[in-house]
Length: 208
Image (cartoon, rainbow, N blue to C red; front, side, top):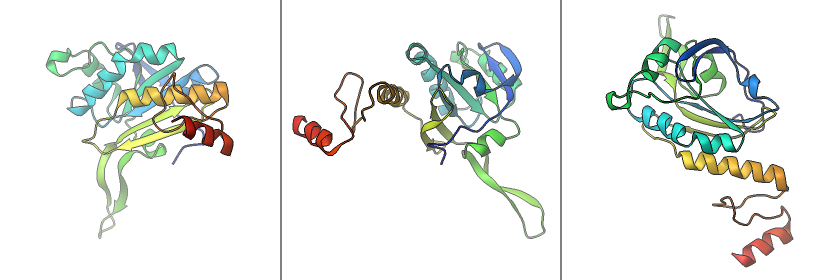
């Protein structure tokens, strides 16, 4: 688990603005400047993945207005990312996505974030084998401006994530940092939070 720890450092190729490959992308560029939602998906040119990637794009303005960058990542190559980003939606592509998509071909980023869908082992003859799937599960990480992880979820391959819930958690983190209160169950922007005291809890429960 990475919550309360610094997000693992990496430098890797990525496609930015949906059209340009860069060789040295890092989340370090956001330190002290932006929150980050960093998420993993299993594979390019698949089925559930484009629905999630495009859903993040549809909400991108909402994340950006809160000072948050969205960054995707899979174990595909940067060239495959670019090909998929250049493919129209009506042909199964993700054309129109503008936020960065990282290429974790060495699988080290997925491993360090704890989302690789399997593990390395040895068979009875001593040959190296991989047990499971050598691709990323659907991991989502909410990272503050200092690089600390405040939330993580990891879904199995068939289970698509809820982008609105990610946005709600970002709102909660911003609220906590700004007001010093805590956010109760099902809290949403504009609703009551509470003080982290016995009296604060009692007062909140009495009102709700």
